[in-house]
Length: 459
Figure 1 (cartoon, rainbow, N blue to C red):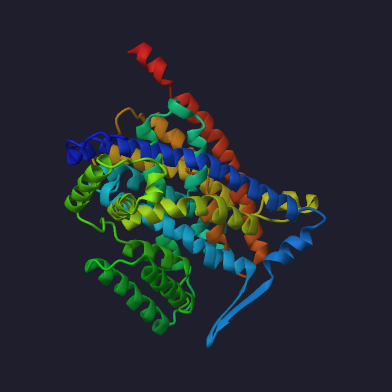
Figure 2 (cartoon, one colour):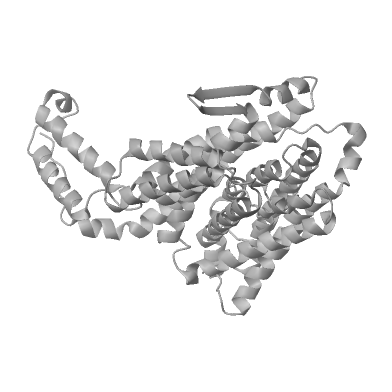
């Protein structure tokens, strides 16, 4: 007979572990960025080598391969490249939307006092890069690319920060995470407002109605994963045929995903207690779960109750994270990072105003904007520095904000759609600036921080 430990006060136990769980969640998220950023780098390197090798033609031909999906009058005629950018990337923006919603509800964006510093810093980190790009490209055919250097790649930035391990204060990691989330929100607004074609209102209305149905189902406690999936696909198709970029659908779908548990905490605790006693009083062994119907039913009910206790928002975020990190983003990098740069025109590429504007925006604009707006918000009393964080560390982290890989490449495809010549200049600027910003940023963060044991000795 196997006796389980009794649960004396489950509600108190849950409350006492909340702070610890928050820290564990942040640390696990940070660590996951290290591995995913390696995959992202490998995919980008493969794309660049492939696009500049003797097999370069096969690279560009592959992504131009036409594919057709037709069901009745519904026709989706996309190239592989378009499927990646308009289809797969919806999952990335869905994940971003879930992260933003979570941060607004219970995270660092849940109160103005907590959110003020990273939001102000993110705002500066978007304004200055756009200004610098526009200085170089005002009144030219590339003027629409001002949104390219506004983005920060959260996977790369946090991945590099995680390489420094415990040397980095947790509050600094949380600041960069929140900054990147706020930056993502700004990037989404830029895409929605400035990088869309003419809008077919009838299709947009259909998408909006389906979206409202998702909210209504949540409101009346009628969440069903399959129904929400079908409604989400409907919302995405509505955006596809409306002319508004389909990835915005991913963010809107995320906002409709329930953030509450599907069962009441009291019911969960009652089920936990009841099934705990049933299993404790039974001959509970690994094989007995298969043999005994009562035990199988008890364990199944515990699993069902535990699943429903975790809000759908958190479950979907947890399930999407590995797919986005290790499948969606590497494929996106492979499809978009390939740019042919011949030795004969390399100098011309490097001195091109588009390359200069993008690189200058990411390298200079990000560090100036993030640092200046963070400093001003503190001096004006709008925000305050997190505990254990110094202004020198904020400046060091601002360099990591200049890593603009994923969303910058995405906006490049929107801003210069159909003009690969302009897009190639922007991609060179993005890749070069991201490498420089990441390298310098890690060095500056290393110098601006001290190991925990050193701090303990000094104190």
